[in-house]
Length: 269
Image 1 (cartoon, rainbow, N blue to C red):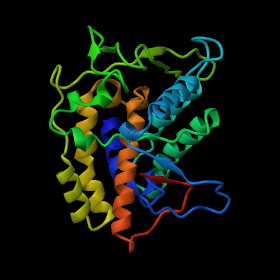
Image 2 (image 1 turned 135 degrees about the vertical axis):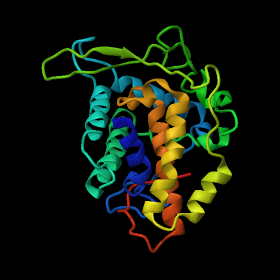
Image 3 (image 1 turned 90 degrees about the vertical axis):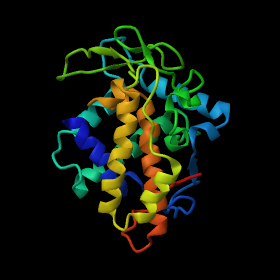
Image 4 (image 1 turned 45 degrees about the vertical axis):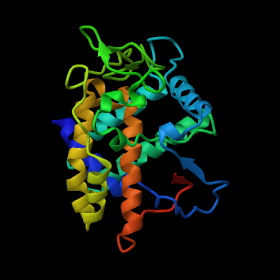
């Protein structure tokens, strides 16, 4: 299935998802400043509000329901990425990394104070459904009703268009989530388990193999759109992707002998 391949890419493509060493970023020439990607719960309330506002602005069509939005384009890029064959190949891993950087760059065109936040979901491992991240204060919670539509939080009623061909009006789809245990979510990997993965992965291939089930549990546990070929329809997708990005940054810092990605203008807190 396409989603399975992307799970492999998200984990196995770690070297391309990250362009940093956590807390020790080398700036490219021309960086006017080094901005910081933070855990979403560590953002000031205004920082989270600004992120949500920028994401929503990206999803505002010029003519309602008749044209793609910039956010629609990213959902399409993600879906196309899944058709590229072996996403563990270096060129495909670069595409995954590029998707994250392009999305952040597009957000920063809306609001230059924005950087992608991440969700350290391992903190919530025993009972993910109780996480404040899955509350109305952040991305909203479980879907309701027959269609499992998200009805709380800033993304209640959120929709993305799926244009199948040029010139065809996009079909709008409302955000859904469907926790895998009805009102509960099966446990995620703990902080200790994540630390063990980083400690015992001696190569990028090892890290890839060990992170695959980590990402799979989150996608399957939250369910709904994030567990489909159009996972970015759920804005939570970007927070999960950024955490995987950070994990690779941590691993690279532990393994300076590994091929290091190019320096960029951001770091992780």
